[in-house]
Length: 383
Image (cartoon, rainbow, N blue to C red; front, side):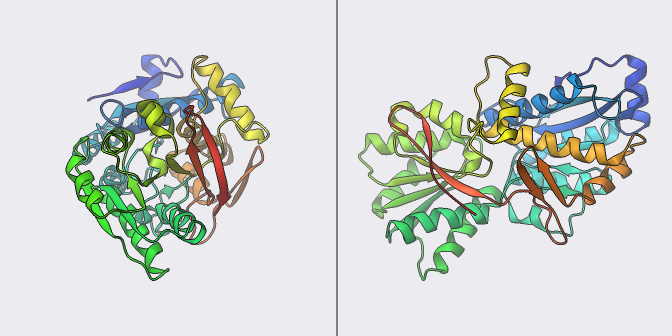
């Protein structure tokens, strides 16, 4: 099994055996599994979520855990490939040593693994994707944190068309379920305004092969290119576009990984827009963000606050709230029931709401832009 073990609690062999027998729950610990990309071209997404989850779990552990149990997170690398994700997920289920899946990364991987988790009766908490299929309330083991891709793409088009008056919009997207989710949302947002895309370009997952798409899009002379992909191919596209004087506004989806994109682009990032689905990670006027920055520093003093790790931290806080609600005699089935029973949470000033037909905790989307100095600033807020 390809595993990246993040040991929040050092469990003895006996304790591990008990955890397996009790589906992730032992007298002194509760274990969660993260099946996500930890190595390769999209690694910053999985490791960022992992960092935030660990910050939340270790914060709880320093306070004595939840009902006297320490929290443990085990991470399993799936390479951002559905086949590997299925294999890792099946291994976790067969091991019977975890109470829930948390922080999986990606649309195609989640589409392949969520049904396996549901069949096993395991919660599927805070997948790092805004895909519409995961918002289906019939998926009773899914508990989304972030706003949907449809909400993000609507915000893009509102900014580009309604506010700026642009009429020629093109799209670059990863040629899989993730990219097509962004394409679908963009097309729908444009159709609501009586518009269509002027061009489409695609690239293959886990590659940076975007030059053909760039040439195709440039021929259409778009005023803006909206982009649905992770940071490495998006950075390659934008860098190359700058080199060939392809002048357009570039708008990225939150999944891109803001900090990683900024790091890859350097000076070429100036003016690039990125939509976001969690609060600004340095806005410590929000109590939960202040707690996050302290928890992040405790788990890694060198880490800088960022959108992905904040999302992981909020996912951890959601998981902890449900664990508290499940009570001291928690079981996997009882934990799933506690998650299903969540309605409104106030997580240190950040409201999370669930309800009939609504398995998504947060709804807000806002836009950020990269400055010439490589800083991220907020452009506006919306829903």
